[in-house]
Image 1 (tube, rainbow, N blue to C red):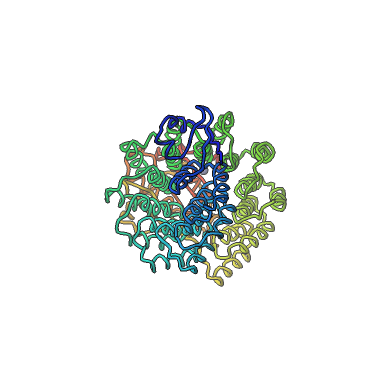
Image 2: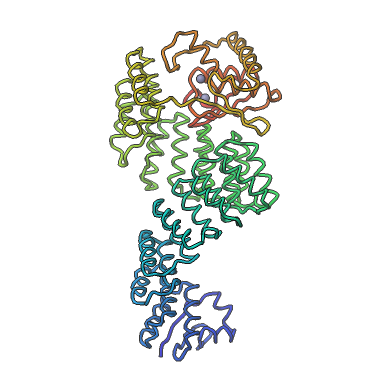
Length: 617
Ligand code: ZN
Ligand code: ZN
């Protein structure tokens, strides 16, 4: 006789006196508090039923005992029961036991393969799931609609696109290409491998799309840096009458945040309100991030304060928001509040160090860097180092910064060397800059930004031979300088401008406004600084191209197309140049406008002739 003791749980309590349930599971209770089961003379159906219950409850110990019992009675060789046992072991993440048993069973049924493939696809090693899939095909077992999503999940986890493509071939051969579950898995796999166009191809071919499929495609766009496409698709989804989920809204709001597209972010806020999702903490956290990235820190903070529970991601969103805007004290104050009951993670410290960096707080930065390593035992990543190198380098401690790089336990990336190069530009250190440039070229020879900075470093040092050398390199390697462009959203429409852009329909009005404002700026004491111009051109030409830098065109357009006192939000794909930074300060004072400017690294808020960055960037 075999006795199995079941853990006493409240759910069992519920069924305690139900005779049907007891019969169904083959239990005979000896007393009310201690349950033991007699497992002799049960039918095949009853064993299956018990195993199903054990699997649902992840009851591994009773499962093992039952396995032993079945082995004694010879029933462990029964394919159906053995498959159920493999399922139980997989669900409890006992993959070795599952695999051992699997090897002993005849393998005609696809369910058995699916169970083990799923086990590995969920828990890893993912390669084993792929190996099993190919072995299954070799055995002549035809994969079904459940096999593919598991195999594709393993491909996603490994970012193995070539295998994913091959699995896709199998999907086509077996005629499952229109299945919505498999479609979602394919979209997810291609998106995780960074191939959004293939993901979209699959998506477009599925006739009956459910919300999971839409969400996979939206997430694919969001995670791969296509926020605009994500928002367009989100609109299509609404037009198709598909009810969004929390995940849809979080993805869409994050895309609006990435674009600093405040009007669309606001619309999504209203939409989530109407759907009743605005009380969800995940949606609120996305809103905190969106409002912060759109320059509305006070609104972001209000949403943050209204969170019922504050998980670490919400704290991170708010701290990073303050950091991006250079509000270092608020960020550090929030960090202090957070650590009273929440443990910070490595992203919290990316925010905190970037706050110290953007606020120019050298000693605080060093303190937090130490705190992170020694108190919280968090291993610094390249992101933490980039902030530290930038901070130390800004203060002119270039040797210390370089020493830090040499002692890094992780391989420095372009962010780290880029931070050093920038610091060299501020402090005119040509020698160290050349070294940083060399490393940056090794990492990515094509990226043009570093050549432009180096050329400017040479130009500042009066080394025109150096400028010429860089120009020749760039011509020789056919590297084109990134076109600088800025954009502003007015009445839900994005208006983009390049330097010296004359393509906008209101070009004449924009130029007239720029001239009017510049005249007032010169009267107020503005002196154009001509050094940041890339090539060595004469002063007059420098001045014209400075005055027509893309951000100034975007601001002038904002000034003439919005009511007085309206806050302007300008975005740029590169950093602001020193002269434009000075000019925009004048512009904010003369035009009585608050101008929020988002460059690649951070935000500047210009108001009454000063910038929130305190001229430290
Ligand atoms: Zn400029
Ligand atoms: Zn600034």
